[in-house]
Length: 541
Image 1 (cartoon, one colour):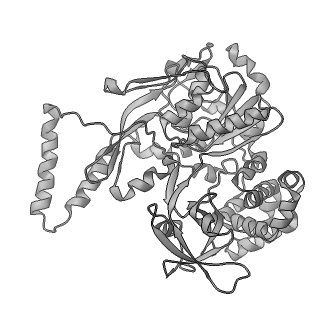
Image 2 (cartoon, helix red, strand yellow):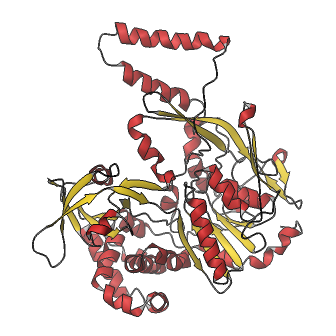
Image 3 (cartoon, helix red, strand yellow):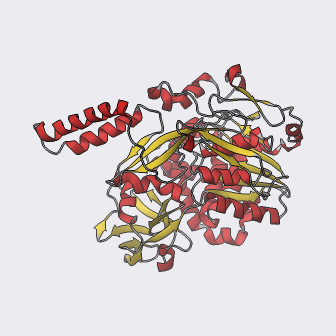
């Protein structure tokens, strides 16, 4: 089971800020705790005394578990923004996105008008095997009615996710069938992709979008890279916009494909020497010579900053976009006896030139509001609103100046496009209207579109004013008040996104980005910048 996800960073600030920015950086397995020093033992003993008093003397029984969990969360929350406590009941879900797979029935779904609708059965999954189809409405799960019950995404996951080998019975309503159809599905492992798109922009320029660094990212990336090279790629745009990070080893492996043997990729420093590690490029990578541009923005964090920082410091790539998030603290998971987990910051990571990418966090309460502060300060629109301290100046391999102190500053700045910010679009998107309309329209015209073919569709299909009026009418049913003036002023935003969503419903996820990226201003600027890459080798950017 997989909820349909979309990335719309270029459309408006609210959608930009909805990206998951507080990504963890997981770089290893469990290690044994070291013994506690005498100076600390008195403080630990004090905690034990308090908990013993609560357990044995407090007027109400059964409060100890709550107190302990709250205390652990509070202690970790006072250290830094990324150390965290994960209760046992949340651990599996917390790690799921980074594993590269999960266990469930294998569908992409959406909730339209309080009804769970199958958007697609994931290829090779158990739902595809039993014959679930796009458009099927799931109305019962294990005998329980779920339609018209104010269903939420969390409810759906509770009903349909579960351990491999377990059984779930569902009933679906299907077009042109009078009675519900019953299915018995055996849950299984379902793969999740982290490389959302890879295609040729023209005869020479390839494009790869990496949405996060999961356990399977490098394998997916290498496959995409090899495929594009076989069809003529000479230049590459690696899109890390909105990538919140993930596994450090996967980021290192991706960066290694671009760097010659012996070049530094990243290094870490902690209080303990055992946490000090250097990652060095190994044998010949698959794309060490071709022209390379990396796209970043305020949603690019952690492992995404390792890749962009390594390639910038080694003068291997032109970094284009806006300043990245600034997450350079390394967490390691420690399992507790009850199955819960502590993710503790054990080191900082640094780019090859010595930059710490971690932004300041002395004000822990205001840490998560930093992105909003950047926006209000004008950083998303003017590069000169960003001021770096000269004491944090470092130099790339060829002598260019770069700065630490928070995030990766791109070599070429692209402001957020406010011309195409549409409040009405955001309202339609938030109400699920756009995806519902695209899904229904694709289902109604699927045979016609398949006959047309994707390339013809991409070049010739136009989202007309009549279609936009139908979209507005559906939105009105969802209690979104039409704003035709906004729709006219931002017409191309509606047209491009709706066209891309319809394509996704007909030809699958890979068909979305080649159309949607027509509105990706950072990408469109990057395409024009390949002639500036030789300047990297001369240290003149």
